[in-house]
Length: 92
View 1: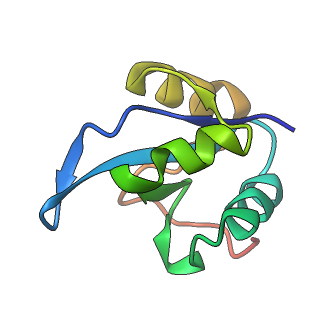
View 2 (view 1 turned 120 degrees about the vertical axis):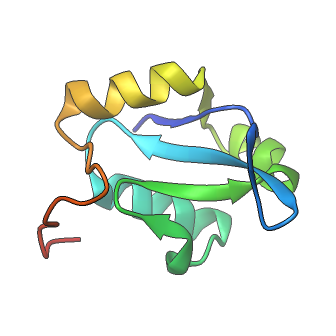
């Protein structure tokens, strides 16, 4: 199981955010997030938004640090990228 995280460089709601992704399956990603105690509402289309204060927790739990560009590349290469505005499958 490999989960990836980019640096917390995305602003929103007065915080900085990282993206947590899998290059294998959403099931793997959901399991990792659950292990960290990240609520399912933090899942957005193809990734979890993780606040900067949880970054070290994710890395300690085994998330691999990559660039934001690499996160997008991994999602596209795996077929898991779900861009905004496109119909979403109903599977988890």
